[in-house]
Length: 301
Image (cartoon, rainbow, N blue to C red; front, top):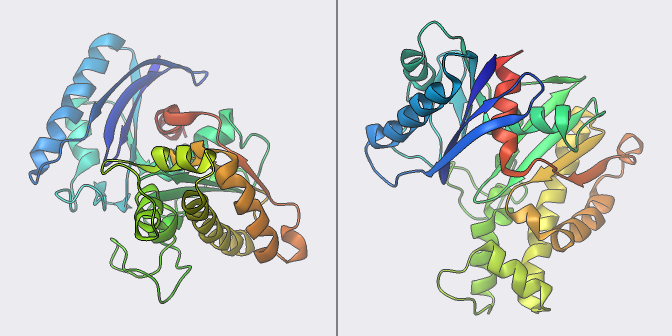
């Protein structure tokens, strides 16, 4: 039997079929429509589901959904910051209506990512783990004492909105100075442009990373600034949750040592408590498949 997994974000929507050992045996991905109408977002989700069900030929035992947040697990609704037309959208019930008589579970995409990395990736063997996705936003999820920890509403580990600069820039969440305003890919590019970087008008974080690798001083400073913000957030979450490992994935993390070297250096300054001295920060291993694999794990819990 297979598990149908969905991974819904502001940039892409993916569906996959995962076998009992956690292998992704089918996947499909589409761009998330840029539309003010909720049904325009739902239409490709429904098509991906029906297409996957056809491939599975009736062999689906459960459905797991990883969604950008915030989410509300008790009600089964989602209100992703980066999908503005979905506010209180009844995602779990809409999916269940397409696959009747099959159990459906919903979680945040950060929790699904960390479940996947904990079982099959860079988080294997860790009992107290934070997974972070640094891309167009900053998301995350927690494994505490060996089990995924969703929290009261499903939003535990949503670390992109930990405040690291109380007097900082306004954030899309309605707050100010969140780590997402300093460390997400668009934030790195905005700061670099404001400080003299001359990338092309459509340049993103990958172009900024290429410039930094080539020695551009402003590009390197942008990554250093974002890394320091991430380090401050990690130190705070680690102190509260008594973590032993942090796994970082997402497009910005693909910059490799441009991000990880200054992050680890800054973390050494922030994480001074004895019980944090062994904290390891490592790159994720599963890449873009983590959300789907984690959603399948979620469905089997």
